[in-house]
Amino acid sequence: TNPAILNWRQRDVVAQSLPHIILLFPALDVHAYLWPIIQMLLKDSVSLVREDVEWSIPILLRNYANGVVERDVEDAWCNDASSEVTEWLNQTLLVSEEEGKMTSKRGYPSSRYYSGGSFSKRQGFCR
Image (cartoon, rainbow, N blue to C red; front, side, top):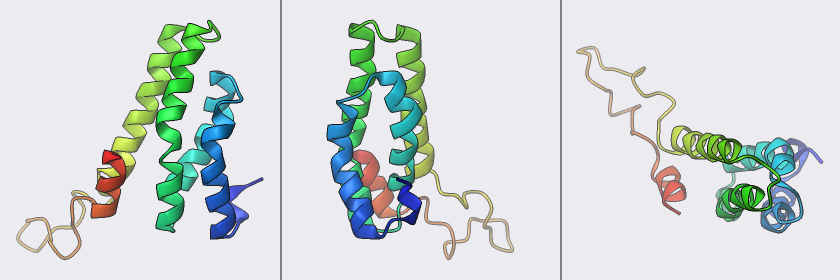
């Protein structure tokens, strides 16, 4: 099912189910099929959906590490996949999209447009 066409309650059910679903599949499949869904849900417009999908992140990283233990994937793949996840989270949740773009007439960052990232996004990253 495509999370983009579901209403927010259905997306929330998907977000709540993802930690359990991640445990059922090998690391390569999780990275190929479930990681893109997690990315979409982490950028959802409804905060409850974002909060519920955040529980999937540690389980996702644990799944990658278990793939190495079970010899399903190489250690280098695990490091690359884990780095991809953490870098994506850093870029998406901590770096403002408008960073460096919005400036005042004098060249200073415009406080009207530039917030350095929203508070809820920073909270999500810390969880």
